Length: 286
Image 1 (spheres, helix red, strand yellow):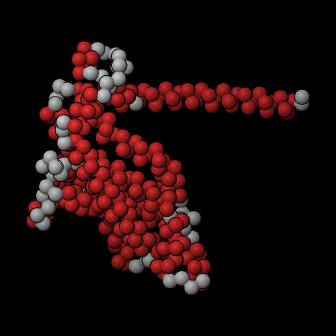
Image 2 (cartoon, rainbow, N blue to C red):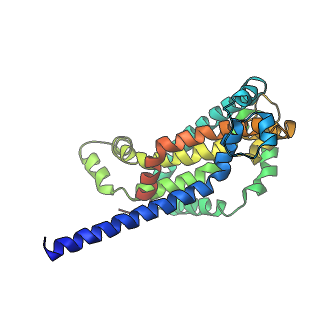
Image 3 (cartoon, helix red, strand yellow):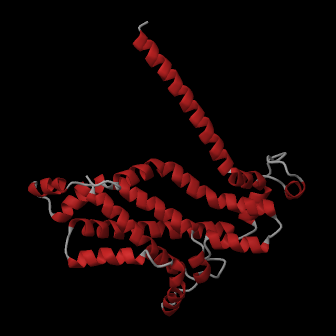
């Protein structure tokens, strides 16, 4: 064995040991950070007597009575359905509007488009809490208080600026030569956008969908102001009311929290690769 081969084998072993140590440290940090979340899940499978009397991390036996109580004896299942409806409608609306607006301000130049871009940037400077009173007055005048369309409109309006900015950066990374080639082949401006640009930009669209869905699913403040009846409350408002009603029933509260976290976790696991790909592609101009 030559000295060069021995050197590279020794270097490869050092790199493997360094990578293994890095992975061990990262796994340990992830476990430490997620201890509250894991504790919530474990508590949801404990009986009420065990949760109040034992400090063990794991339950002595798995009990599903808390989930049964949350889903069968409360309105929490209705709150979950309402959140699904709101999140899906808001996600679809944001994708439709942000794709068109992002493409327009990316491809077309002029005072109107520059002013629109600046206006969106200025909107990001205002705290969302300043809009609560005007938003309530507007929804009251439209007779939308205590109705799901009120939060749908509010969530769409608040998520659009970020979605448009994200897709603008993504469209900037797509060479205009692709559209010119499509126009030479006979496509119209809209045809090149629909058939060429939009399929290429799907990772960016997926990123917008992920962020919008999670924001709509987890939002509490606007929903707590606009929604009052049990039948139209979203999951965050329903969980807050659940806390007030069952303050000392910690296992049932943890079961409700676990159920509210599952959809976002599943959605993120499925769409994680699109999230990373979309953020990376939209951050550089090609």
